[in-house]
Length: 294
Length: 254
Picture 1 (cartoon, rainbow over the protein chains, first blue to last red):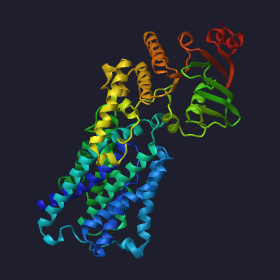
Picture 2 (cartoon, each protein chain N blue to C red; picture 1 turned 60 degrees about the horizontal axis):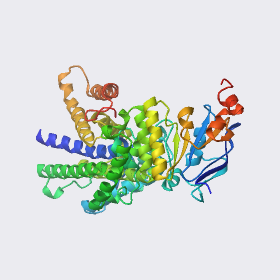
Picture 3 (cartoon, rainbow over the protein chains, first blue to last red; picture 1 turned 45 degrees about the vertical axis):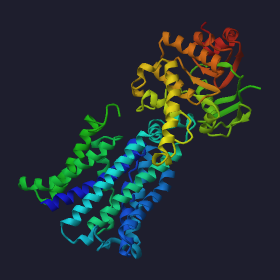
Picture 4 (cartoon, one colour; picture 1 turned 180 degrees about the horizontal axis):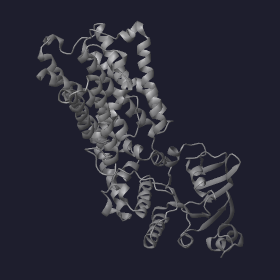
């Protein structure tokens, strides 16, 4: 049971990194990124492939972040020309393209067969719980650093500028400032965090395949942000915890509901997530942590 | 040589000519008004002058340079500021933050400044906060300084936009309907502020406004637009008595 709780916490913390990144992009800068999973996938595959080639994990993680961030550069440039809904469609298309490329380029990624045998984090600590707890510790540390950095960023003059861009880009330009620069930068920062989350995922799960990087992952992160409160880093934290507790907790609900099969229960869970999303957008659009009027 | 000059600005959407060879001039420290019916092309003219819209033809010169091909950002940096007909406040920033977000900065808005050089950022911020708070007091916004801009009244938003432009240290400000939806007392107050800024800071103004009485008292030169053209200009009192202006602007009622 304890091992299970640690495993759930690890996944929740990975989602938290994803949510912190997306919240920086959407909540603070207004960038509607529906392709977050692409950068998660790039991070996961980059780190997995490098470590399978014998790289130590630390540099593999660094390269994963860097590659995911760089992959966001062209998408960031696109965001300059596209408004919200168009950007949403393009980023969604981008993430599916990335997934299909991973699926097709078998020489590199082994395609649909996926990559097995990815080295686990803290493998040298043995198979037992020590490795899991060490992983949990590193993930907590990474989240704390990410939260600290983002919190400092949004309170700085730079953060004020990105929020001004979110509220009114035309006004920002009319005041002699360039929204383009910060939009591209924020896209890359958020993607870097997604890349880091992806690297953790690969080395926690130890097997990755293209079907783990469906748009559903992006939408889970969106749900976490909407529930928690866009434009609040605390919202990203709370939202991802609630989402994961619900997704995992509801696995056990089947034991108490007779006559429902595993498959049916999975669908019911998804329906409930959808319902929660609808209720939040109607009754509390600013999310749990959000202030009024956002 | 005028501070700001627009020459023969034209803009069409398909067959529809929104601006038809419109020209106007603003002298150094001048205050100029533009009136005209809804749809006469006044706001479109502002957009062409400040760069949000690219004109089909014509040129804009400002402070001795041709700025026709500069993006809005560069025009603002040269000291040509503007406000909008529908205020574009940064809704989820406070009044104070709105002004601080408008301030030109050397360092504090670079991504680098998030990670290093915090002391430099703090120093810059302290200097700009002083300027911002001075303008906030000047515009009588002190009481709402910490409030989110979205919660301000219509008139306060107009003042907020003016305050933001003032942070640019502008030479000329284009005001798009500063009195629209503003109560009569506040209209007098805003007029006084414009006069004071003009007299003490030497800032030139171009003002689009339907409130003719207030405008007449404020401007030295008035342009009247109708269907994308300037149909009359000159001394405000004389121009507003012109029968052609009555015909076009007020449908000959007065």
